[in-house]
Length: 184
Figure 1 (cartoon, rainbow, N blue to C red):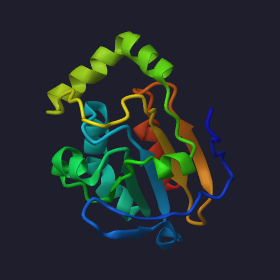
Figure 2 (cartoon, one colour; figure 1 turned 90 degrees about the horizontal axis):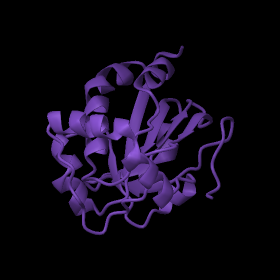
Figure 3 (cartoon, rainbow, N blue to C red; figure 1 turned 90 degrees about the vertical axis):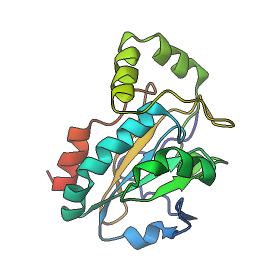
């Protein structure tokens, strides 16, 4: 089991670049709320649907003082080929060596993926992703067993919510993110 972060802890800082080569320093986000979302890989249909939902809500979140940084355990070229085609207005970060995933204690679990695939609701999620134009696409070299995680971090860099998914379809509800963005 990984070392999971908890509410009230300072979020680990990092420096990286997004899929367009723009530098990102987590310290630059002080004074704003941040959603850090650790997705599976850039061709994951469910992850692409999640990014699609974030893109639609992002203008409101920005006005409310919240930014988003999305991580994928994929090479930059794959991000550009898959999720990058959505032209997200927030950074998409390639972390093919899972260094930031490890920093945030995001786990890999074959067992949780098996449980997800056996869950009757998984078909519904896959159909919703397909209806939105995101096909279930294998990605060479991706970590199929990565389990998503989301972190809501306040203006002072303190984790207000750490959501480690139980299955690959178990994401932090959008309503909770919206409440956090609105300061509720």
